[in-house]
Length: 67
Image (cartoon, rainbow, N blue to C red; front, top):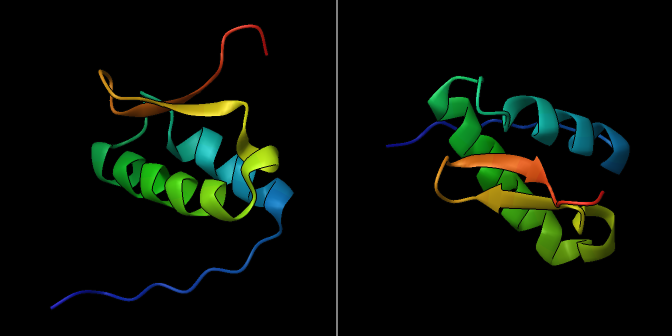
């Protein structure tokens, strides 16, 4: 059994949500959700999210170095 959540946002807002909720200080469950959203959206719009990466060691989202 699972829970379905429906959210609508433009790409700019998705970037904001992912950066905010993927931050190491965010609660771990919401960080995991942000990581999954980033994976999905990166597959569909890679250039929009190319500067964001998943830090596997910390299980968080961060900007690539130099960006």
